[in-house]
Image (cartoon, rainbow, N blue to C red; front, side, top):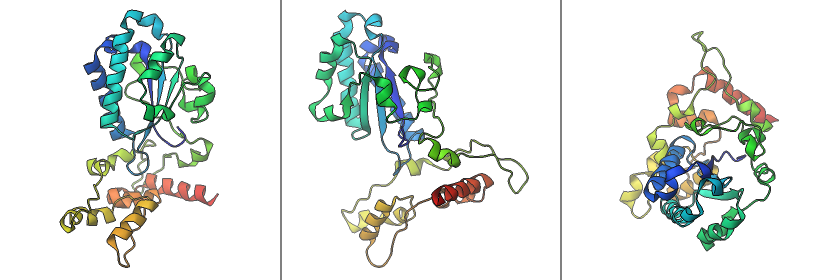
Length: 276
């Protein structure tokens, strides 16, 4: 969406035998979300996702006699997600809802989660309030092509989720000092190692516990709010600096990449965008 949060689209008509196999369904969803955590999240910046559940044609592909087992599978998925990924989902929109399923689906949603769930009658209009057209398949009112089942994995991540304002932040091809061109699709994942994704638990229960993470936290990629909070923990006159641009981020997580011509150009374009 426009806040760079990945969108998980679940089309129930493609579930097949998974619809009645709770264990396989839970394993599949957990695998999908673990992949998202590793490759679609940016710790401290993008830590949530949004979900679209599409019930189009579900009554044609699933026998009414299996509705009970499907509801049981859905409940098992909800329980697993709540326990393993609590707080990750920002909103969930259920589109193309058959009239006969409304009561069943609504009954499966926990009362404390209902404010995050909606049933838009005009899916295109509502989804386009949150996303750029090129981020959505045509079936949902966007301009991206509709994907066949075999085209949906590996997952697709489109450029410029924030729209025209983010166009200047594309990674251009530019010659390096060695005279060799660097790839346009320079991947920041090469710099974001496992420790970056795992993060640190700021355990302040004792001096010994604090010593295990404090020095490393000072040189981590922190938002302004996190840097302020850590400065209060450190105390004294020391002020922990936040990470506000790509050059500083690379200095922290991969100093060897700071001098690449591609990342220099990204920083120049970022500065131009901020000046405007």
